[in-house]
Image 1 (cartoon, rainbow, N blue to C red):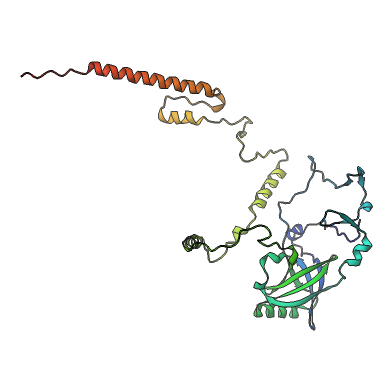
Image 2: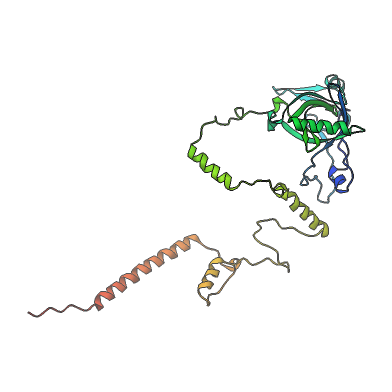
Length: 335
């Protein structure tokens, strides 16, 4: 396997922060431009979502990964693996470690700044992952001076650096006295609306714009409510894990289940709504459960309805005949 592959750290950063330990630096180097040189440490500014889980067997044992060759039907060892580059026409070109090292970027400990530009000149699609830059050694004064100057001039710095054998394009952004390093996507990674088939822009009707503007204004707030950015899925998952930790034999029922287990372990009764409605109209009505009700035969139900309509029609006709017979006859007037 290529020697340039880096393994993940065993101790997740979330655990380090929870324990109160200082976040470990991922990279150390120097910001350079002109005659300026400022030593810094690179620290990740985000944590992985707590909803991420590992695949284990039913007993909770961690699973290992094996590489299998489908053509020769055998499992490969770590030393049997090399890199493969797939071309646009589907061909696979193998590349050895020596060949890969020959085109790899030159190892450097510098963040070389190429230009300073207004922040709004960088489209939001280009921003990829945020990091913090912390002053290293005795560079605190120069670090603060650079952050304040960039904030005052409204500029961000564009540069590149090499970390773990890979070259990154980066934007250095001042953020309340701190320098943030946002890795950027390259231009060929960005898709355009035309490339994905979005319709051409047309001018909307002015009345509709006004209507939408009123709807937006009704939901407009002066300040963002930070609570709206909380990960509620992760909170729900954390509560579930705590419940499972307390009682390993506990069974958590999924949402939307039709039957719920009561305290005695028996299925809860499902009430027939029609019977409940009848009882609300008549106190003498009897409420039965849906599971005790006989199954409904649609053909039989249609026949019953047809018979009821026929009977109702005959009864109405009979009542009409009786009414006519009982009606008093009009007496002729005497002349």
